[in-house]
Length: 205
Length: 155
Image (tube, rainbow over all chains, first blue to last red; front, side):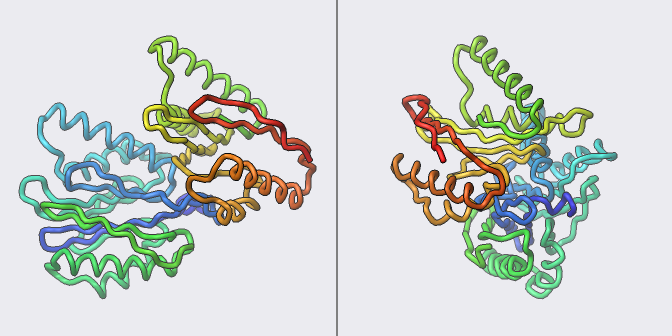
């Protein structure tokens, strides 16, 4: 069995008009046994910026610690907030620095620019190749299941409510099919003045 | 901390961890909290993972956090997968039989006696289903008053 699906987990992010939606499942397993049902794969690294780390959980935790360290150092040195594009480049460089035999985790960055509030989403592979589509990104064991559903649900310039609906529906469809993810979904809708957190209950397995 | 895995690594790793924590206590005059203990242990296992001698140990960490006033239970496997703040965790082959039992029996704010009964039921099932004989289990309770050893759960 692949190490990338040892612990399981999926993250999806969608961009709308001045808002971003990021969703995570809550399952952590050891191959086919579920060990924990409250493990988020997304983490807040800025006021309106989240990073999602899927793949091998141990490396995801290590990479998260390194990202938090570098983000804190950047903000102390530069005395300004980290922008999502800069965070993405930072993570990409971190992953590429271990090009041979490196971190087995696929990061996803979603957030609003701290100054202009423009939405930004991107995903990377395990060696840091950034892909910045304008619509949606997904990483994790269930990423293939998302591509078709999201394509159908996503439209240009959705407002926060529509964006939440689209993300939630896509996530639920993918959780139905992916065995290594599930046990509930957390959807974060990030707008310039608030972050809305909603829990969805789908097939709890 | 309960450590299982490769025999030599179990002894070496536990010894190494305990000595480091004693040193921390001597240096800073206070003990590490369960959360930071977990962080250090996971970091150690994860950073040694890609070296020639990685730690082949799985551990369960149980404690009481004085600052937050809450119990702490977490586990770290030999690959560095850390799972924090869980209600119940199992390790080993027999653990797999017991997850479902605890899923049914566990409730939030379970009193100590009922908790111990639940554990005894899990052990009973483990003894029934596992191929090897599991004669004795030692029982330890950790709460705000410290640790105390209770009577063994004998077959």
